[in-house]
Length: 130
Image 1: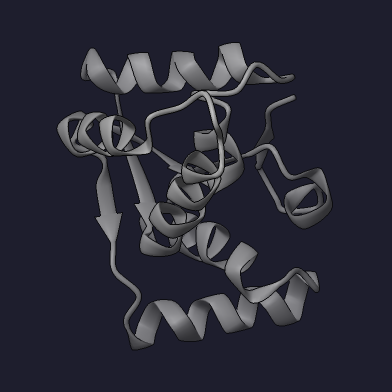
Image 2: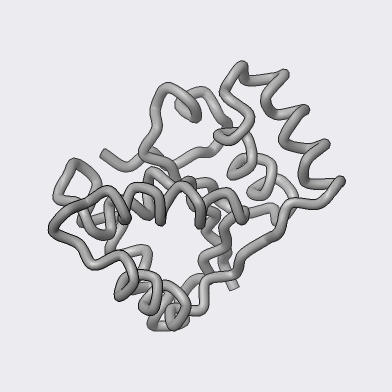
């Protein structure tokens, strides 16, 4: 099965109407249909829910319930992933929290999807949304 690794900037597009939102929602729908598997580094969860909890028109507790039911693979940060993210940060110059998604994509030989052109625009084979 094809694996899609998402940066939190893509997950935020699931509940915000911004450029790339339709493509982000289609990735989630494809995951729901079993066509792809979505995988994220655990830092995604913190970033995603931080934005959700600051969005006044959104019930973050309800969104969390949906997130859990979606069955997205969450990769916890351990020593190998941290070392890979530190290497990505050194190569790309992005912030450490932005380095986890590309590091995970490398680990899983997966496609990286991001809405953050500044952090991931130069990453090989990234698919930029928006």
